[in-house]
Image (cartoon, rainbow, N blue to C red):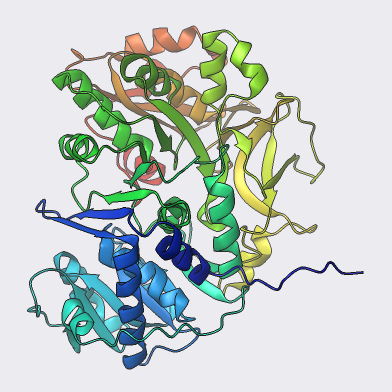
Length: 539
């Protein structure tokens, strides 16, 4: 027997319509790299999306076509986030920081029909245009009118919008139809495409907005510093529309001084970004004495969040750091670190220890850890195994990549994350490491993440990354790269080793000569530590 419920497709146009009808006066604020400010409401945004859908129709975009973006965070990029999938096509966000060969591969693999590109980012696309096999037209986004470019044919975004029809015509869309395409950063082999459905985006939006997720409301002003070209900007463009949050885009300038200025001018209550962004901001705030006047929380993810940073923001600035974990393949949110009811009675140090873990699985996300033989391990906080996940917003495979899909999905249908984790009796998951980053020394495992966090707990340390080097006797040994704070007076390898001695067994400690003080740790295209560069150039 089936229930007597309406057939209500879970599709992105429903989110857009809710923003217009329920939260029409809430604002979208967008800053250019030069500091120019653009403001309009969700109601006005809706009208622009309708016009853009009609522009796309005139450009020949049909159901299932891939439409690429090569852009910073701003209101025009947001319009594409909605207009493309609402038309039944697939919005494909290109990572502006990829190597040229990766970018060319992705555009051709996705068979993009159009590329919408910021006027400030034309040069990389111009250099590769001759390699693109399916791109029919380039649309340049900016405030300067018709662009001067070798791209052909190329047209100005605002000129197209000025001539666009404003007739509302939303096609029928089936909820399992593809809506978005985002490729992994390709740390091993070619990048792999996560092809999102409307249903996945809709359900992920609901679960991400819950109190145990991002806890967004229409009273919040949210600023995603995480790029819109990375994992749907952690779904904030959809979350803010669903909940009617005021949405602020800082644009291309993500230096701490500019972010602090915008946060305070726009009364931002929640910000989101990778740890390296907030590490720099913490140093800036300490140096200048500035405050974050309205921020109550920051969702930080993309890499392990140092416990010392969580504690510092809370004690010094009364800002709650919520560590989030997820993957492009999960749309992307998987867990958020929050204090459960019983944890509120714990001593403060124990609470910070809990907040330094990846957190409790989000609604609609199931998790398990398995050993090398695939046997499920207990949730006891001690057993360590590969983390597997499943849920309605988790990929069932990669776009047009049968081999990668086969390797990613377990025999019983779970997605293999590649992370090594524990889950405790409180359902709190902690990432020990990526499988490729674990250090095996003398037959025993050393967690690079735990060692990095310990080093970054030192007062004079800004950043630290730990990798393995080959060793003829022990197989592998840890090498720690340490970046001192600019005003920390320097830090020595001896001080680092002495600090680690209090937290690690002697056999786990790096040799003194393997503690290397450097000026900067290389970063990936999405702001994570680029350990492959460290291994290749420094070992």
